[in-house]
Length: 124
Image (cartoon, rainbow, N blue to C red; front, side):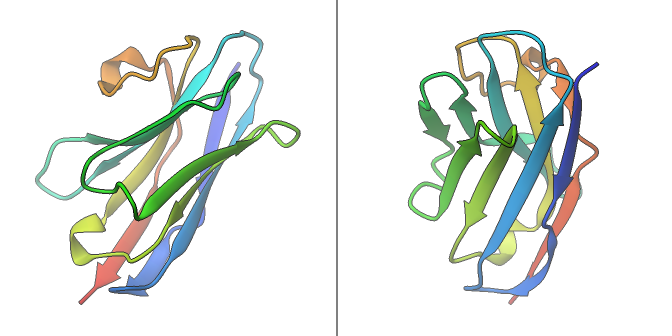
């Protein structure tokens, strides 16, 4: 049973940084891809970034390119999202997701496993 647990959210000011973590337990399949999505109040869930576990390939939404960095630690089975130069528009609940595939999908329904979410609030 795969379990994803996010942590690291909080309240910060515009221009600050945060690092989110997603701990993955119970994974048995390979290949494997993980991603971050976010959902702001009144908006649809959107893809933020994804990483292929085996080769480290990454993908980013245009809105976060150059500011966010996704990475993984294989020994800890943990994925990270380093978020720099945060903006009020980044305010959302951030979810990690996992999919037994080599492909990084930007559509949420292609992911089989989800965490509970962590709130990120950026004040202006």
